[in-house]
Length: 225
Length: 253
Image 1: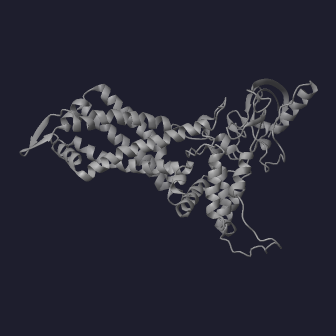
Image 2: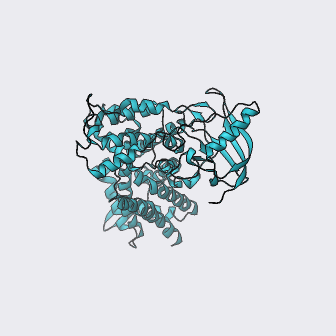
Image 3: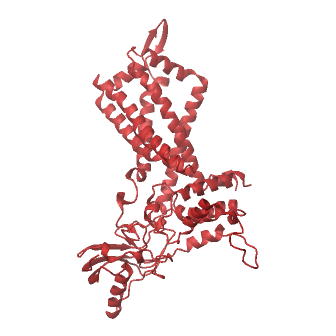
């Protein structure tokens, strides 16, 4: 079986979704660590310096464009599989078992993923596009001029509707990752009684709860400050 | 358990043939004993339909001992009904109460077309087995038992996977109509044993390719298959199939 055939099979496609999913999991950790600098009481110096570094370092920029490609690949292949999966049952059941046989989260991956994709587009437009291609006020620290993304964020999160969109986005992230991390592990064959407890903990508590809560408290803190 | 009789409302899927659109028919079924099996309840109803000169309801059954994998039926939204680890023939009417309405549907999957009423064509599974669910053996006398040493844990895991009766409840229960639990059980029972090693790689690749070709959906690891499997085949088999497939794909030409 050639690689082109291998990645054309259902399992091959799932491996691509899982691998890109793992990469996106690692990305949210780095992104969250950077975002916490928004909560420093330094008038944005640390965050703006960090944003300037991330925006100008060539390696980071290469990864950033790769990241957008990975998101498109993850969503594209997952949607393709979803449509195929729906087509596999042309006549639906009159009675469905609901949560009796599977968790609600595990059945909503495509819905939550789609909400996340829409959220990511809004999010990129709000900050990434504005930072790189829009008009951003500047600020000077120790004689050096920086784009004041910190201020842009502070202004945005004083708007209630923006905060609501971000909290909804993080709820979708939570529901997506509660199942997503473990599911990707299973797709890669990582299922062993000695490690399942750890993988479950990482999937549910770290990616499913801690990370989305960490992201969501930033707009909430800024809004209520 | 105390014996009781019940009157039931049955909502059964009737479909003349593969091309018929089909629809639900309602039947009042009085005086059903709690000690009957679910299929015996259908026998009672069918006797009556035959006496009335009507077409009896077609459904699959054979051993009625829970080991052949013939019976199917999606009962109130559950493959093989509400009991865990049970085939429809071993589901007993004490699972229901007097006055219950029971909805009975055939397995729903594009790869399992309805033949008639509750009977579906599961030959897609046979074609998956033909693609690689076998081992090569020398002809002649049977080899002595225990001639090849096998690790006890692996023998047990292979035996647990081999308990799969190919009924298709995994496909029926899966929201994607995926056959991964079936295929993984069939791959695992052979991959775990030394006898299965010569065809290890081609088996994983060919059976997965055939599974896709039959039009089954892909697995999203919801676990509904494991919850509904009458033989309680474990999801660890799906992880093993994934490992087998990755390893085989990496070295195949």
